[in-house]
Length: 137
Ligand code: TYD
Image (cartoon, rainbow, N blue to C red; front, side):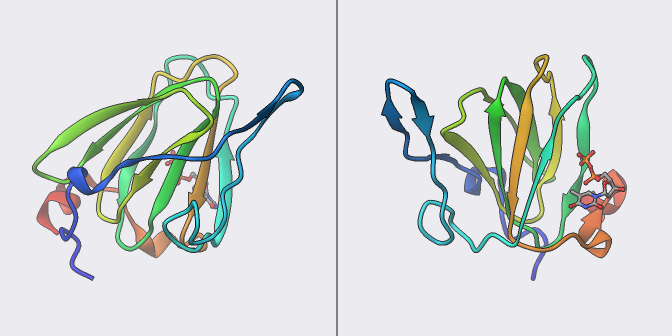
């Protein structure tokens, strides 16, 4: 796949269903229905110390949905030409990251949980961890 095939403008916010009743809410996310790809892996970031940031890498093939399952944080995405920052703070909204986006997650609120749904299993070979390599791709 061409690594610069997508831009930040191809990364959109997806609004997931919210099933509400007086005892609280449920948000279901199913393969190829609410999720725009088949989910192969789920992981979550938590206990992020105040002031810390995560990410600072890109993926060659991986697609992700990034969700603030609890609390809030910011995601800055960069396709090498354009940059934008999206604040996530609702559990029924997800940021769909296409492949080839440099990303940084920051401003985690205390106790926040960043839920990530991913299209591929973990593979270090799919990462670009050097920003100059990312720009040269
Ligand atoms: P990394 O993706 O670099 O974290 P972040 O972007 O949030 O800063 O992963 C951090 C470490 O965790 C790295 O050593 C790889 C490991 N890891 C796994 O083993 N499996 C996974 O699914 C993920 C996401 C990370």
